[in-house]
Amino acid sequence: MNIDIICPLYNAEKDIEGLHKSLLKQKNVQINEIRYVLTESKDKTEEKLKELNIEYKKIKKEEFSHSLTREKEAFESNADILVFITQDVKIVRDDWLYNLTKDIIDGQVDACYSRQLCDNNTIEKYTRECNYPAESKIVSKDDIEKLGLKTFFFSDASSAIKREIFVKLNGYDNKRLIINEDMYITYKLIMNGYKIKYCADSEVIHSHTFTLKQYYDRYKDTGKFFKENSYLNKYKVNQAGGSMAKYVLKRALQDKNWSVLIKFVPNMAARFIGMKVGKINGR
Image (cartoon, rainbow, N blue to C red):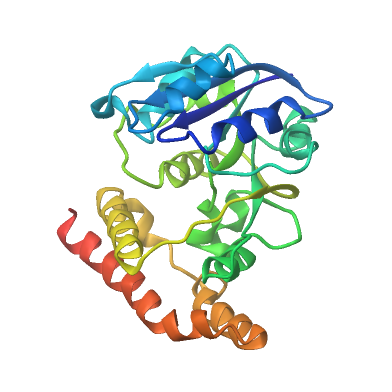
């Protein structure tokens, strides 16, 4: 099976060279095309793309959408497998793509997502550990009762899906989603009887340093997503899904990470309040 890699770009001047080189180094896979879509940027991303002789498409800011930009590229692709990545992932291993797609190629599952590691000492280090453990797992409709909302956890920071299934399910239904487009498609996959694998051996480094305002805004957008897709609210956040705060606190104490401990309560409050505001106001 051949693979198209779809990657939106915006102000990616510092990311693109390393990212592109890491994609070209992947072994034991057949890459059909790397589909970069550049949104009008303020930095020199376009100059860098030209300098490196990398093919890309360019769109205006008002054209970009987390869902629609990806969907358009997916529908235009003729590859067997679609791989979605974000510009800020760092790919160190040359078997990242093979490990992400091998179980789709073998027919065991229909979509996969990678393990995400954090290379900074912020709270994200522990949330990544919690959400992306060292053991792989396969999830299907049979797991809903056990996992609840966690059944639909997925991340297109590094993910793969059979193109024919993405097209069959009509992608993101031509919706302009501001966030959680990965959960949107995962719900459709699971409810239509497809299987998803979390691939712990397909590793990427994906780190941010968000302010409290940025956490609040992200969770407000997430709350809005749940308000607009209210069918997801019937799935409870079970103990496994609700224990992230406890895990973060425990690990920060073990590491004596005082910076995280000091910011723990404000950080969790920003997430909680943002989610509530988004669900109530929907804007």
